Image (tube, rainbow, N blue to C red; front, side, top):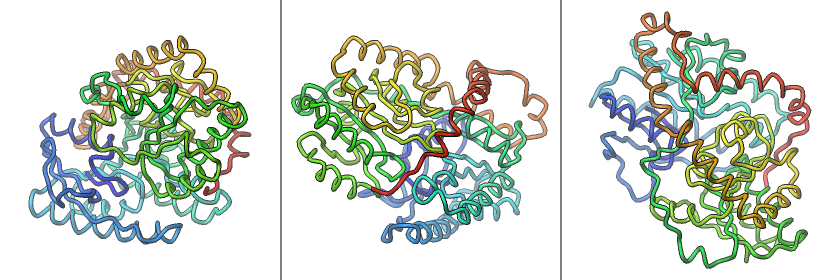
Length: 433
């Protein structure tokens, strides 16, 4: 397995996939970035990790170009090491970036099977991070994505939006695409202990968990909290930001500029599972401020699943895949309206009964439909189709699980909402804070 943009322990999707494959009897090695204070090679839960030192000394578009070129070469070198030391039959490539297809293609030539695990739509991610008007790079990223589809023996996606993209934009046969949804590993959910220090910071604790990148809307979060604090005159809250990323310095500066120092705490990335669990369990409300745009509409957000697993009510902008995941566990705000977002936060702050009802709904939905255990059969089935595609092609449209039926039902919802969302997409713009 190959991942470029996140260390193994910080990537819940790669971690749970690797763990499930190992439990199914496969020998699994993962090539990933080196995380702080850990060895370059180690074994975790039966999975062998080979790590390269990340390149992050330049920011902006040029920085991403250097990072991806360097990482692609580093991954190629480490893959040769893994081939020599352990051997492998399948290369499981997680994007972004889609430049990793170049490494995968080399192994395709010598008979290895390729799984393309599309975590994100890279062209839309580029638009969200940078300029929606620059079509040259967008077209290049679309072409890299198409090459990734073509090289792959099988494609794994996180949701129906991504599956539709693979079929329509990538011209991939539906039988070659499997939905493996993001879902929390309920075995790792800790007891419902709260953190006394955090609990004492304010009457209402609001939690954001995840990456702090330009596309993640933490700048929107700061402006929402400004509306809550200075327009709606609510001072009885503290918002905890659990995460890190390339936009964190700008977001901290914005929070200070908006006078939020007494109402926001940047806790950083929390690797300790017990501490993370205590902070999440202390939350009264969880927040998902990703703005409305093409990229976020199609993303199944890990944070949403974790909020629901912890039984917490959510406030989010009205994103297609977030609405499919959370349903009645969230209040939805249309059109990137930051003031209305603050109004919905205030509504939940004043209604503990509604918070409890939404939290119970979300937790039950995860326990009965969305937990990681329900995605494992789809992952293993994708491997069977990848390794023996001719044998499995005949049953590609055969047995359907309840999750498959849910996803097919979503096709109708996507069709019905297209007219409503196209104008929103056209108006959406993201700029660096």
